[in-house]
Length: 345
Image 1 (cartoon, rainbow, N blue to C red):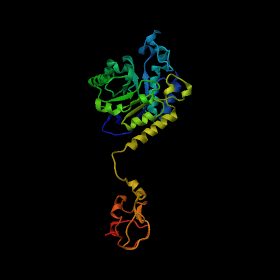
Image 2 (image 1 turned 30 degrees about the vertical axis):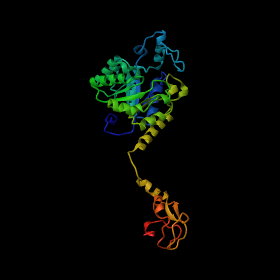
Image 3 (image 1 turned 45 degrees about the vertical axis):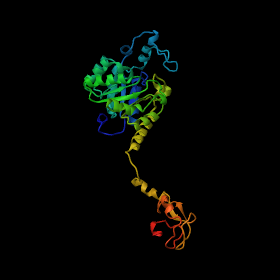
Image 4 (image 1 turned 90 degrees about the vertical axis):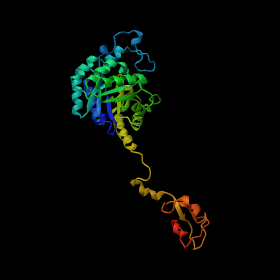
């Protein structure tokens, strides 16, 4: 994939995150992949865990979501993950459907057993979710497979990101992308701080992108303008259908708009360019220039009443007006004559 080749400048790789939006239905999960393909995304991403591999089935306070404004508030981690998990037995069918539709696919493993399982399916890369960025043994294991890696950086300090990057590289990861991420659902634009993207590129020496939990597509377009090489966004068929992630996920028509508008944003970046472009040359006529505005006889003096700046731009630049005021014209001309140096030469 050329996304890993930093010498190639290309539009961002758009990844549709399925997460728990399958709502426990394999048919719906397959429909999500079809919808993603129809939207024009480049890849789909799964999450590979079970409730028991990611947490404990305990109702103590620290095992309960404590975010009053969250739709998950009051739920135990175990019940939430049990609802959102993608059954492992679905993975082969989902991977196969993605390939049939011309999409790459990969997943976020959350423990060593998930990595071992995913290796049997040959994902194109591994994604480390933001909460797992401090799980250096997991990062080491993924890196040792030799596959490219994507690491989300939500909540992480510069030091923690540095440890994750160093661990991945030391264990054999030659192709790494970091994602700016705000671990809030939904995240606000004000908390996104997308200017961090080019800073991370310089700081860690690898391409960067965005794992986007904001509503809409504005942040994705802005990230593209800041050099993001990958945009990850949750996809659902219909938010009204509910589900653990539906409230901050895009519907297909919105995902399609994201794909299209990030391409527009990328094309609009262009290069550093001054002066008229080829397609602008016809518009040069719309500039102002100096024109004789009243019939003049030979020897008549130029004044503000017979010469001024108007459109079109076929005469001398308005900046030369002072060179003519008070000078005598050397021949008779009619109103509408563009001013040129030979009128006073």
